[in-house]
Image (tube, rainbow, N blue to C red; front, side, top):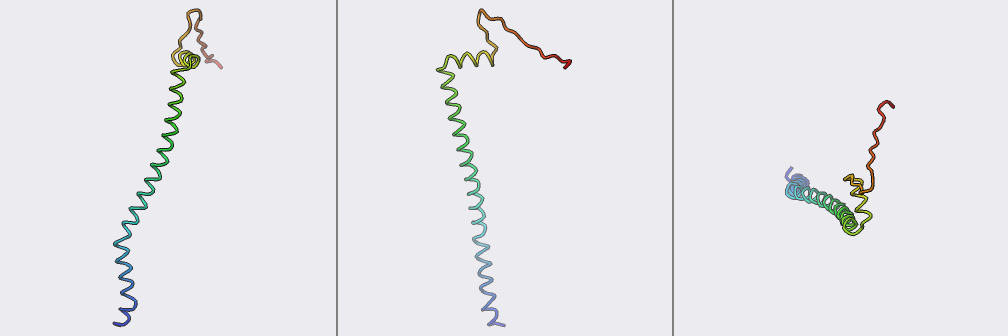
Length: 93
């Protein structure tokens, strides 16, 4: 029995002890790597969005035609000689 204990049980106990010591660290590293990958993807998406917004801002600041388009569409601004027309949908259809 003593020989059996030394031969098989000690390696099993040793493997279990090592697992108990190192497994939580491996799990934490895996979670942190997954979180890091998510943050990297989010960062890339936000950088792309930021570039689009910079481009839009530059266009708003420099392009007079685009400025007029925004004023007309979003704010309903009309020129002095224009008559605003509002189309009301027919509710009977």
